[in-house]
Length: 199
Image (cartoon, rainbow, N blue to C red; front, side, top):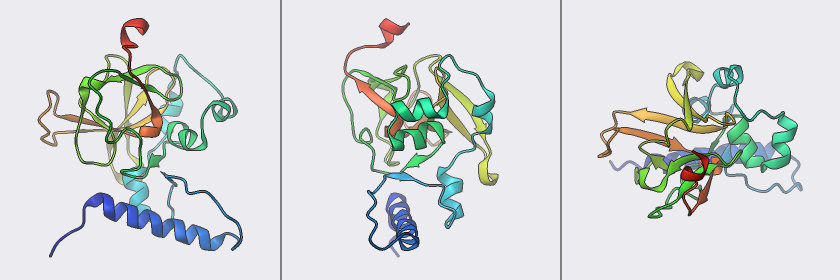
């Protein structure tokens, strides 16, 4: 028996959940397809895998503090959903998933703080951009115990924006044996070196 890749299964479940959402709306209402996963109450396992508990982040303070209204004014709806509400974009849908420049810096889409350098990005095949390490001090880690699972959430150390999660010990041939699994919508890319100018 041949199994489909995990990302294909997730896309199928996401599509099915979108169809059930559509059937609850008016038949003539047209809504644009959003590539970020909602909390998906009809499929709890997806919420457990891709959602995040925001309680630890809400208790922390960051150099850049804004109200939800201020964040909504500067972020797209997808960026707000991921960065401020700990959402997740659909696997394989992000701009930076298959983006492998020789040099440059990935910055926070919320506050433009440098987070990752291009030379720490690697091909993991997970459907999201993967990095083996962040710029020192750029990312904070929080324990995320949503839905009975314990994971390590990563947030921007400057504004507290949700980036994704860190996974350890997966056996990738990287110096740290870590995978920072980051949502593309949480990032911007600058081809020049922004690390030196912010340090």
